[in-house]
Image (tube, rainbow, N blue to C red; front, side, top):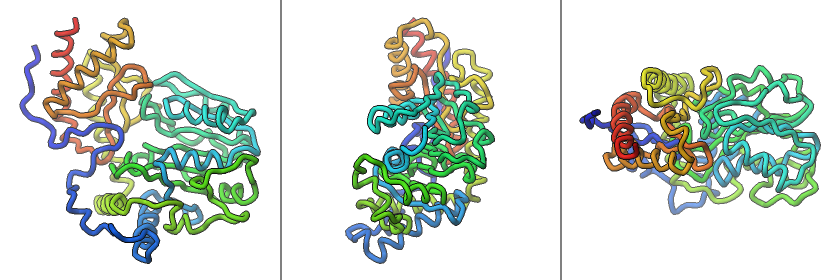
Amino acid sequence: MITMPVLKPNCPYFGSGPTTKPSHWHVEHLQTALVGRSHRSLEGKAKLYELIQRSRQILKIPDDYRLGIIPGSATGAVECALWSLLGPRGIDVISFDVFGKLWGMDIIEQLKLGDVQSLTANFGEIPDLKAHHPERDLVFTWNGTTSGACIPNADWISENRSGLTICDATSAAFCFDLPWSKLDVTAYSWQKGLGGEAAHGVLILSPRAVERLVTYQPYWPIPRLFRLTKNGQLMEGIFKGETINTPSMLCVEDYLGILGWSQAIGGLKTLIQRCQNNYTLLKEWVEKTDWVQFMTLKDEIRSPVSVCLTVPLLKDLPPAQQWDFLRSMANLLRQEKAALDIVNHMHAPPSLRIWCGPTVEENDLKLALPWFEWAYHHTKKHFF
């Protein structure tokens, strides 16, 4: 019988979004937020422009790429790109998790575009990337938070492509060294890699994407929140801090503080190393633990940040009973405040999901592992 551990993580937050904040974070850090003031004031626009510039610096975004703040989290940023840019070429949609499949559905069912090739894979796998044709537009997710799989590299994307690449990098930004020369449109959200507050997205455009925007007009009406051009010209203000709608200045201040922390610890290189350290710790535990396994079996496509785990004992049970087991296990951990929010997305296969991003402290994850063991065996005793 596994006895209940004694030591607990200082921070038991292992959910995949919003993710945990850096360990030094405190609400008092928001005291300098520009609350009660217009985001269009000189001070408000200065804060937003600072946010854009710091993000650009940490992510190593090329100088000729535009970066703007979009409403609606990464979902809003991706939808903005889909509604504004797709149509003149055939489209390849690569999907291997819940959200990739949703982009494909929107393109086919909402925009009603006909020349769409869906390149799909089961959870824990990725499609044949070489099936993408460089003359076609490409929509894909870099890191599948619900499948535990990720794109291994960008070698398969042509430098001489004529189509645009639209990348949902929701949980890849600040966790991977993204190859900007291969990405024409990139979307991410603050609440993933750096644990910022939700509701705001970021849209990054290459010069090729800007050229498409100003030379192509979709035949469908574009909702106001998605409009990036006016009278055939790019709305440059969006990429200087003049947002489409009203942002939360509390969220802006929170993100600025976390960006400052990121710079202070060494920038992107250190953020990625923190992810790898957490993932290595979890991987070593999984490999020596017989009751759990990775959903993504191949090392080369396994995500090091959103790690999805299955329980082989449950494989012959109906999905509803598998979920009951996992939720009971997670509820024990929640009651003990040892690990929170570790059950995977409801549209994924029954599984656990452990966030190993840069704001998670390695020692917290280390202290959580014995609790996973305890919760599993305690739950098993009552289910079997």
